Length: 503
View (cartoon, one colour):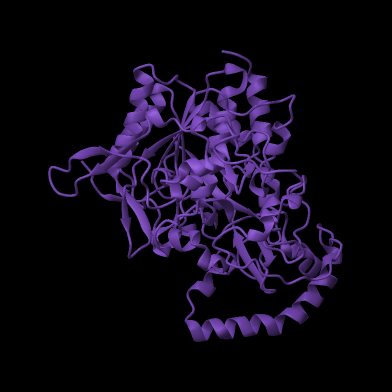
């Protein structure tokens, strides 16, 4: 048996997901390789080149397919400590609601809650109207991750967490490599808590933020029970991950869970495949479990596993070019994303079509290599949710100090898993893995991620340019192997299930 360690979040991933290094996700890859002196020279060069380049591109934009957007007065602002959501957005008036509700007392779910930008990107708001009411009723999503933070009930109502089915696994790292069970609700890393918040929503200072499937139930399965304080990484073994998958399969086989009504989300990965995990995945799929996993954060180096397996539904990380834009405010994550994702990016006022569309592929999102299968892209850049990492010290006594922007394909996967939950609810139809994968791919929107505006700052065909709150411009580029079938469109996927009709 293969007992190689499975890094849930590699050193690169954790650097991406820690907001103290948030600028790096929008910086050309070459910038990451420069020393401090070279970085300063690079920054100075960018500033010197900006004016002539901007003027040239403003002229060139007349001849491009994407028109210029109306210019707004440039505003440079600070969101303060960007490791957490800005405190200023807690003001009730900015939410358009009259009052907040005590967490855990009035909320039983977050259906109909506030739609954040990442949900808007996948058109979730099209499914939140009273006449639709597709919220994931009767569906379970098993989050195989770090487990839940001890303060999880501040963020989630007890009715949305299947506490009776929650479990944790840990493996002895010495022969005979025994695997035993542990609690699921004593996590030191908030990675799993953040992932769950994307699926069912969460309490934000007393305000309801909706998830993709707010009436689904989360089964917390702790398979990343170790934490490396040197690498800032939660991790587990292939045996622990396989045990988590097998556990969910057993719940289907013994009748506790219904085939086609249970989804597994794995926002974790390793650079090498594991026969233990693949065997467990195949058995789960055969039993009627839907499997979703993150693609990995190694960029052009290729996908991680289990996301790289062709039979697994994998998620790349996309972002919104309106994030952090100085023309907005620190609460960009609550702003409206244009319905037409081909709308020019905010930076097009300076760079014309070279700035790209409303969405992009993050530079860290893994590319599909030969033998791998990347399915769809989903929001995975600076999504807000409850989170903590022990690198920053003990878990705060006040849970209101635990809201973070987090980026990585780990954040993209739960958008896909939540969409699968909505699909599983629709018309009571029992979908199988291959059907869910085919529908997600056929309904994805590929156009805004394959708008050919590149071959300028780099050798690749697709590019996006951003203006951050620091007043500087950053760019990223990608190619077809990073896109999959396009950006997840949740409303279209649910509609496609309805068109199938009952079995």
